[in-house]
Image (cartoon, rainbow, N blue to C red; front, side):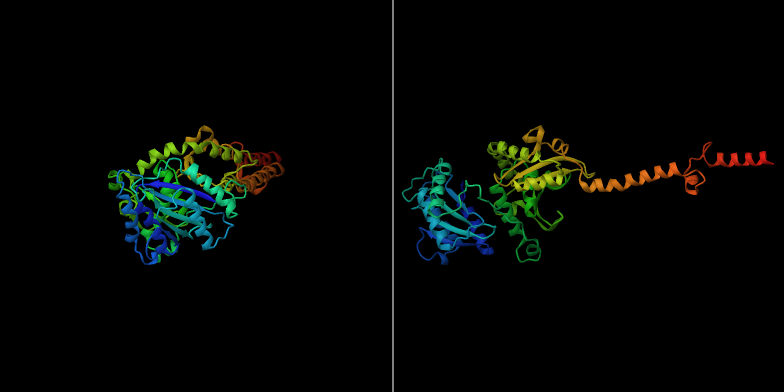
Amino acid sequence: MVAKIKTGKNIRGALHYNEQKVAEGTAELILASGFAGSIEQMNFNQKVQRFERLLMLKPSVKTNTLHITLNFDAKEKLDEDTLQKIAIAYMDKIGFGDQPYLCYRHHDAAHDHLHLVTTNIQADGTAINLHGIGWQQSEQARKEIEDEFHLVKAQGKQYRVEPAIKPVDLEKALYGRIPTKRAISNTVNAVINSYKFASVAELNAVLKQFNVIADRGAEDSAMFQKYGLIYSLLDEKGNKVGVPIKASSLYSKPTLPNLEKRFEKNRESRQQFKPALKERIDKVMQLPNLTERAFTNSMQKHGIDVLFRRSDGGQTYGITFVDHRTKTVFNGSELGKAYTAKAITAQFRQEKSLQKAIAPLTTTTKHLANDKTNHSLSNPLETLLAPVGPTGPFLVKKQRRKKKKLNR
């Protein structure tokens, strides 16, 4: 089991994300602790108000929201009763057993995972200290729960994490079965909240994996000049389709000014993941007879997508690594000179397909050379191809006329 805790300042946003998934049919509320009455009959505002009443007791605490995900191995098929027991045990072990919380079971990935939403503001107006909760209380709780419920251990070699975000279903989005705005919003929110990137280009390196792109427009456009940003769906060829959505119209407001605030934080927080990424790249680069295709395929087996940036003329000028294990994005140049596009591609050998394409040309050249050696200029084709001038066909004809005169 993998547990991830995100602290924040927006309990409404955390609830909205999960309730939206329920409305789409990709999640269900399986547990409500600390809520009076029938949770099935409560609407969104009633659920939010339960938390907001606590937040009002300590308005000076700005970081007051916990959004926790518990991820299970893809091979584990856990029933609802077991998932409820795991959620209760986990919340008790991290010190939130007496807090109100909601537990959602999500079905939008290849593996089972739970989302838990709660607050650290208690009924007496005091706040639970969140310092070190991830690597102390949560890590200890994870290990104990793995033993208690006989789960695949996250630190074991056999544990396999599947991507928690699924690409947008273009057919459903384009034909109205899932509104485009909702489809884009869900993907953008999930990527922004999960991955660490430091530019729009790096954000797009992730979004493109899920059929979405952020677009600032051409540099001479009014949108670019006004710092605007829109999001669009992409088809299987990477072309924009459907109606683009303004960033300011999405619930989480993933506008360019808001993204740039994240860029600065992400640059610092992702540094710790550089060594492990470089180590995996080095391991792949040691493989024999490496081609670009073999490199990208091998990197995917290590949980890394590789994107080469090319000019209109097909020249490679950049490379980006998307590490799905640590949820980080790096340009090759940020990792060091050995990881730039130029350094990486310099070690590739030519693709076999290119070598096969060159082979017939080489064979034809050899045949022509042999023909030139074995046939005299009397061969019609050879005569036609012979250079025009003093050593060409005209010289041959002149020599023949001279020979005829001597014979007479």
